[in-house]
Image 1 (tube, rainbow, N blue to C red):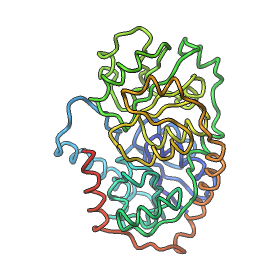
Image 2: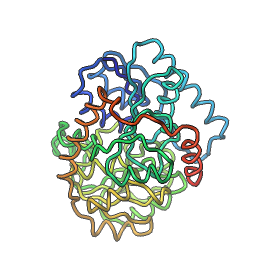
Image 3: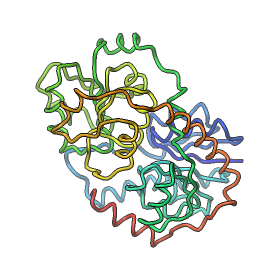
Image 4: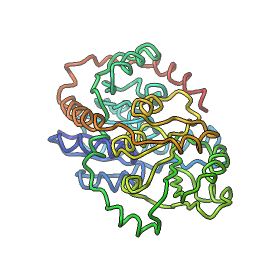
Length: 356
């Protein structure tokens, strides 16, 4: 069997425990250097289909965004067309999913999508043949919100299995690398807008501890002008985030499902900043795990009360979920594959307008 994986960094981690359970040749189409590094050992062939779009203070025009998406979609199409592919698998709600499903649809390839955020999915999941969800609530809401019924409940998050068994650097090595042994990690992810950064930095500067800032999709230059104290350090380049968070005394993050699952599985004290996605499945999961979800102006108070999340069950369920996805790759025909189509696409598109 030949399977194409289309992934950014966080989904790449979720794919690894699934790939290990599949008897297939893997073609990886990656959307970041991190994803390429993670998937290379598991792939027969691997190609870059573009780069994740860094957020900037200056908003790109719709025309520019459309041009970049089209360019990467054509890359994805060409890579899939040149190789024998029996199934395409996507995960998450980033641009790689849009490009992977669009190209696979054009080539009439079967498409399996792993959905984690039912409130803010990529509109192209309307054309996936089968969609997995982490729980019954997600299954119900996809139907009610978007008329999507071709779903399977896998009862967990495969990423949690990866976090539960990935080799983690000893804390002492992290302390030596970053020259600090008592710090918090501040992660500015996909739920952060450039306009949010000044206020977030202002609030974390009130915390009496070293803060290592991971800018993720932001340029360092977007953050450093707002730093006024010498206890805040921006870490640029690729970071072994799991090892860094594990060695920290706590994580403050404005991001979605990926980091929520990671801190939950690690059992690291954490605070989730309520970003511009006021309604997000990661907020629900964080609260279920005992992670405080706080507004920007409440960061200091929330950090003073943060505690270890209850994530043991998260890892156990993640193992079962990855096994279920692996089984689906050879038994998709047993489930409803009637995709939502144009009607569902329009409903997702209209729902996402509030975040543009």
